[in-house]
Image (cartoon, rainbow, N blue to C red):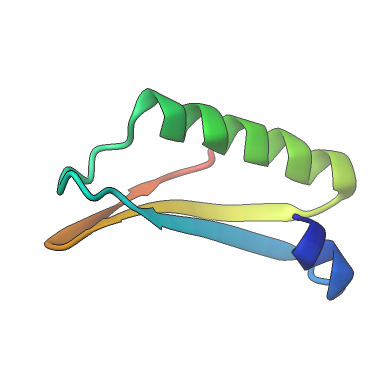
Length: 64
């Protein structure tokens, strides 16, 4: 979020890989999403999306 604020951005999303090959969001992914949503709201940003990527696909973990 610091980078988004530094460049005067208003929204952001996050993507990361799961080397295991499973695109299902983990409990850590869900916790990170909740923290990102809360942090974004605190500083007036809009959190758009959290995406898990694997070699064979991807899965969206909606912040809603």
